Amino acid sequence: MTEERLVGAQSSRTSAFLRLPKKGLLSLRVLLACMLAPAHADDIPNLKDPGMISAGSQLFQETQCAYCHGQGGGGAIKLASRSDLEPAYIFETIAEGRAKGALRMPSWRGVLTDDPIWQATAYIMSLGKP
Image 1: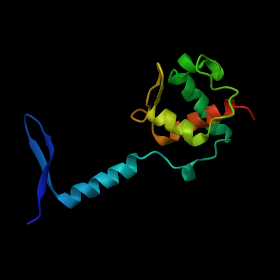
Image 2: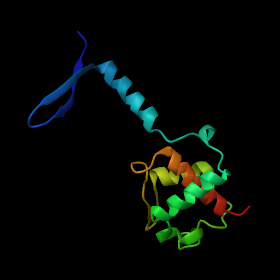
Image 3: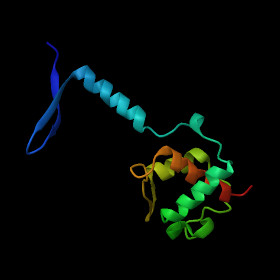
Image 4: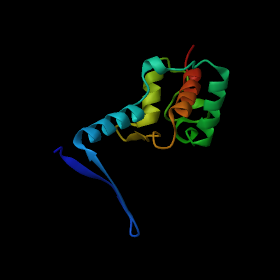
């Protein structure tokens, strides 16, 4: 007999449980990891698309990015005129957040999906040196 684990949620009114074999839990974990994994460099959309850049600019303003990065990326944490930023690095920073000394960039993974993160990435890339 295969070992089973109990997976589920329980409320005060009803109980809903699903019994999965141990292999089933592993498959579920792998599936979730693939779904939640950051995008790969091969998945980078056209970041020079004016529509993406425009949508990223709007998102930059709506999500208060300008509070730290300034209007147009020239704030205390500069994004404008930088040539050292790579798209995958920017995407990962927005998605997962970063910490450097006392500075903290929050993770937006739970708030934004990949598409708006790529839009913000396109906008930030547009601020860099040509």
